[in-house]
Length: 423
Figure 1 (cartoon, rainbow, N blue to C red):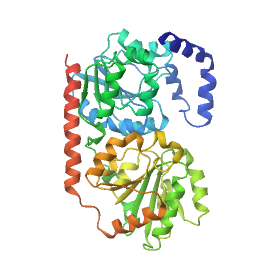
Figure 2 (spheres, rainbow, N blue to C red):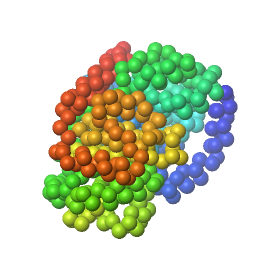
Figure 3 (cartoon, rainbow, N blue to C red):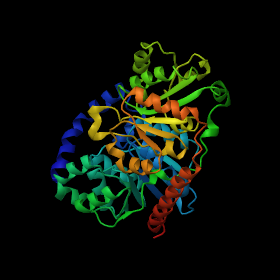
Figure 4 (tube, rainbow, N blue to C red):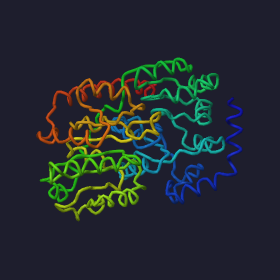
């Protein structure tokens, strides 16, 4: 099977320029740095120990920040290479680490032998860490060919992904047995990886519960905060198609009780904001883009976020958060977004019936009384009316439980990784 996978990637090779060009037109690729996906690298490796972390998208990028903060303090580590696939995750990391000379960001090359060979030969990492569920066969095989330690950290395989791999069980075994260590996020993944042939599997919990040291709340502009200080605020995050209309209808219901209600909507993909703006405007709502927040006044209904990396800051001023990708029936088998960041900041979490990607996380938060499932704008509105009657959530015991869980997970994961750094 590996032969046929490799062969298929060679067949794709002549069409790569067209593929990337079309993605550029759709603004899904960086206008110039897309060449990094062809292993056209203009950054020198430098001397000394280089640790490489690969993540796919924003959620995974945020989950490794506690690890990166600790790796920065490791004297042995001279450079930290972070690779991503999506443009949005690259923008978040660029904003976070632009001035940090120890950290290098690159786009991961396409999983074609020529490109992955050039990439690994150039960077020659001393330790490679794949986050979550990023599995690229050609890349993995070349990493191990070079005898580079390979770790899967915060591994998470959904039932849908597992069922795909199980049809290719022999191929899956050849891939997953290459990992020297698999630190998984939940029991389900632990069981799946055992079946798929992984070795040295350990379960310390979900790294996404770990807290980063940066204080995002202080980064909100004081003038912006002053403009909204008298408003009742709730937030809808990682919304997908149709969920913004759901939020708008909820807002209209809420206005019957709270005239000063402000709804913040953070779309999962900000390239949709113009369409969202047009759709919500048809409901006679006053909408302001976050980039134009200085235009906010008492008549503003919706603050529509059109930049990446703002979610955590806005959770800090929101009492309640609706997590998207949970109300779209067509996404039932690939549903749910990570609620941990909002819960850690003391927000009450609302979600739709479809959260298959984060079942274990929602079950844990539900046991703490943090989450609530809703199926209609009326139901969400009624719940929000009750929550907004109270002061900003003061649930220190729950916040402490989440923080302790995350701290223990982080420490255990770091101890495991340091074995490979210091070996």
